[in-house]
Image (cartoon, rainbow, N blue to C red; front, side, top):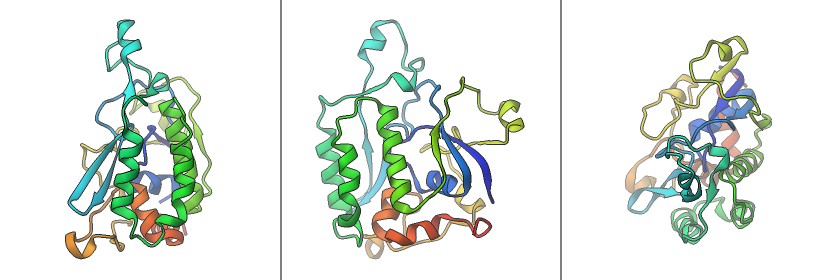
Length: 227
C-alpha cells in the first residue's frame, strides 16, 4: 500500500505506525494549523521499561494563552511553547537510558537524538518536527516530511480526498485502536530489550524500533507492496 501524500498531526517520538505511514508515502505533511488536543501523541510517547509501559509527557506552557481567554481546546498547536521550568528533559533521558541502554543501537543513535532535545527549542511544533525529521533520516526514510502550510481542513473533508491526501490526524491516537500496521502487513514482532520478561509489546515509540533494530528498521517499516 502506497500513500501519495499522508497528513499527520505533530507528535513527540510518535509510535511505529506513524513512521510506517511516512515510510510508505511519497510525501508526508505534518499539520501546522490545528488546535491543540490533550492526551494525544502531540506531547507524549510510550516506551517499555523493566516494569512495563511508561508514558513520557512533554509539558507545555498555556498560561499566557489562557489569560487571553482561550480554552485548552482553542489553542493553536503552533503557538504552544515547551515548559522548561519542569525537569522533563532529565527525566526523559533517564527513562530512555534505563529502557534502552542495553539495546544494540542506543549508543549509536543517542547523540543525534540528544542534540535536538538539548537545543532549548521553545516551540512544540518545531521540536517535534526536528525530532521526526532526524529519526526519519537515521532510519533511512527518504520521504520528504514538510509542514502543511495550508489553512486547516477538517478531517473527513472531500477536499483532502480530491487532493489525494490520506488523513491520519485522528486515527493515530493513544486512546484509539488502530489496524494500520495490519493494513500495511507490518504487525510483526522484533527483538526488544525486555522480550524474554514481558513478551513483545507492539507499536511503541519509534525509538524502540530504532534502538533495537538499527539499520534494519527501514526494512521493518516498508510494506511489501512498497518494496
